Image (cartoon, rainbow, N blue to C red; front, side):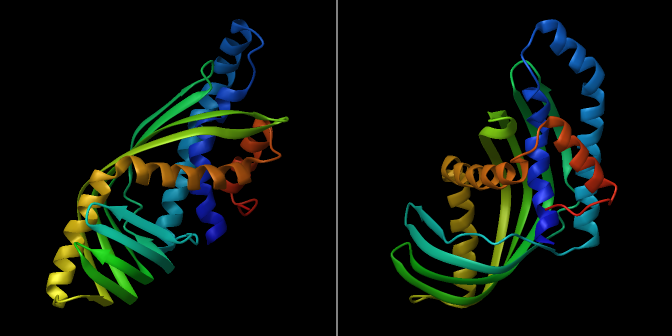
Length: 250
């Protein structure tokens, strides 16, 4: 399942892959755009629909392992590790925008998810609003109206394609947090859940640039690992084979 999840990330990189064909001449680029542009757009949308089918078929969907997370902001400092993470209700995503520019070597995207559910195991320690926090258990997080937009630029590393730049922006309307095993100094269970729901919402809103940079770095690393050693033609053939079930994503 983790191998299939990597296709989600590759789709973002592939949106920009067509931009890295060649700068031989304007005429060549126009010819490439006319001959290949529609095929690329169609293939990317098919890839996104393939992702949707995976999310539907395997709901809840396992999330790839994440490194230790450090959450630092006003009145909050937490060090957390997560395990057995799954995401559900993510297949109802809406594709608001897909745009690519061959000459500029870039692509833009905007995708929104009306409601998404994330849960799994956790271990955490730190402080929130001056109160000591410790915990080891399970959590559930419901996210309402997550909108993610981004900018991707690609280039060549030797003869293959690599993602050289990725910027992500997001907005969240609301989130609700519930858990087991979390202890906050001097607080009841209801107070803990209310505190963390508001604290996490404030954190994601107030630290959007930092969170986005961490996510972008994570995505870029996985995408470049997948794209390494493949030129544009090989990437397109690989993705087409994955979509049609001829191979499993690696």
